[in-house]
Length: 337
Image (cartoon, rainbow, N blue to C red):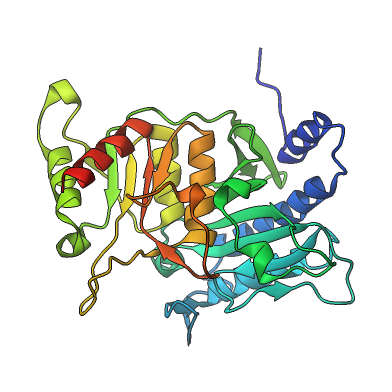
């Protein structure tokens, strides 16, 4: 018997029907976001022909060079989401401050945080990139959302997910009841269920880390990576190194196959305090939500990612994320120094 065909819209709607108290607002919000993903996917696949490859010549709030596709993806998400009546405020990795909903549109009870195009520096080399998103319920009074509505612990997320734009376009999301993946069929323009109820393996054989930063690592991290490279069949070593420098792509592979992704704290010149690289609100928290729903772990090395109280919109943190046993083993090395 062939597998039944389930679109992401049907999947979301059936999930909504399991909750009689649901109003449909969250479902409508997700449908708007799915439309934005389709538009971005279309343009990513023909970026060279559309002349939107390359840099704009400007830098974002993090000091990163902004690509033309960054600007395009950010604009598409904003224009898809600002008028639906589901959101009270947005925040983007590409924007300095919160993004208010225009006064001419009605306001909703949800907050959207997003990285419009993670890994965009790789786009000219045809490496997979992606969109990461996170949804919270509004907590402040009044119709307009505030910074306070955006500065939230990851455990408060209602939905988190990402879209990978690669050899195929894949949407992965969780509303707190498991993790599900959908692949875009370009022939019909629909995301179809391809990865139901994703469970990441408890232990993997892949490690993903930028080893060019080895001199900035702490001793525990160096010892751990060296340990993974040792040949010991009894413990499943050596691990395979897989790192493309696009967080969504690296995370997606490890979520399915098992393993560990590391972007540990590094010491910048002239500073003693370890510095994180990845953005808490736009990258670490949503992926941590997903990996925990799939049975994995996410930590800074010192604390659970989902328990961190954000201090500002563009806060950076170290990120160690992946299969539970691998992350636990890393923490053992880290604590030993």
